Every structure is written in structure tokens, then in C-alpha cells.
Amino acid sequence: MKIMSLVAVAALLTVCRAGQATEPPKFVSATFQDILSRVIRRDKDSEAIMEVKAQKDAPQRVSGLNFTIEEQPSQNEVVVVIWRNLKTSGGVYENYCLIMDDAIREELRNQKRFQELQKERITKALEERAKKIEQLTEGKLKYGMTPDEVAAIKGKPAAVDEIEPRGAAGLPFNAFIWIYPNLKLHFYGGILVDVERKN
Image (cartoon, rainbow, N blue to C red):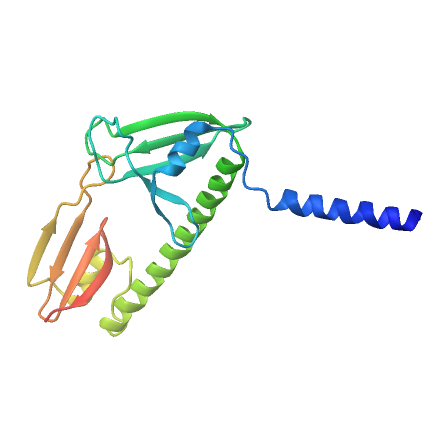
């Protein structure tokens, strides 16, 4: 009889634990629930939130706003900022300091995974770009060479195409394209970053 009771109790504990493991995340923050209901884009690999809809009463309607979440050190809080990338001020639409809950912890894990994946993606893209430059120039040029180093090998370009891209602070980057009879060499930040064949 005792064995049957012990087996029954063990089975009940197993069922209870299984039920706990499959429980949906516990929400504490109604604000974060609202944000989750407005998500319009996630990173496909990490499931991290990338964009959310503006609230219905937002002063300026936009199709999608950027999402960032940052854990506060030594606290059980996060800061969530929902913003639009503008060159002028006024880009923040929503800014919250929220108490951590299961859903927020899950999003923090997703965001951390997204950052790891981004580093891997950038590394892979740079490796591919470096390989492309070496292939198209038959090993004469390499990713990261300065204009002086390139000119010492290729000579002066036939033409130069100046570009004025702007960074996050609105400051121009040193970006231009050197045009040769058969190639276009792209410089960004003062280094060679890409090569394309001219048609």
C-alpha cells in the first residue's frame, strides 16, 4: 500500500512539474504586453523584436518604430525605448522603465542572441567581401587598404565619385568610389571595402 501511495505521489509531482514547465510566461507589466501586441517585425533567427507600431495616439504616424531594451545593472528593471531614427531631435516616441517579468526576460535573451548573430553575420560578410576583393583584383588588392596603398598598385583612377553618407550623429563619412576602366573601388571610412566590375 505504501509503495502504491509513493508511486501515486511521484506521478502527481511529475505531472505538476510538467504543467509548470509548459506554463506560459507570467506577465507583470501591462505596458510590455501592449508593446508585444504592436510588434510588426522580429529577427527571423533570434526572434528579437526589431520594430513595433506606433500607439494610436502618437503625434506623428509612422509605419514602424525601432525597439531597444536594456537591462539595468544590479536592479530588477529594464529600460525600453521605442524610437524613430531621425537626424534631428525628437526621435523617441516611448520610453519606459519596467520591472522585470518572464516575458521581458525572454525578450532580453532574444536580444542577446540577436547581438551574437549580428556579430557572426558581420564577420561572415566581411570575410566574403575580402574574398571578393581578392578574386576580382587577382590578389593585388585587399579589404582595408588605404587609398595610398591602392594608388601605389593601381595608379590614379580615371574618375572619382564622391559620396556623402551620414552617420548616426549626422557627420559625413569619408566615402568615395574610384573608377578604373574595368573596376569600381569603393572606399568607406578611408579604407577599401568593396570592388565591382564595370560593365
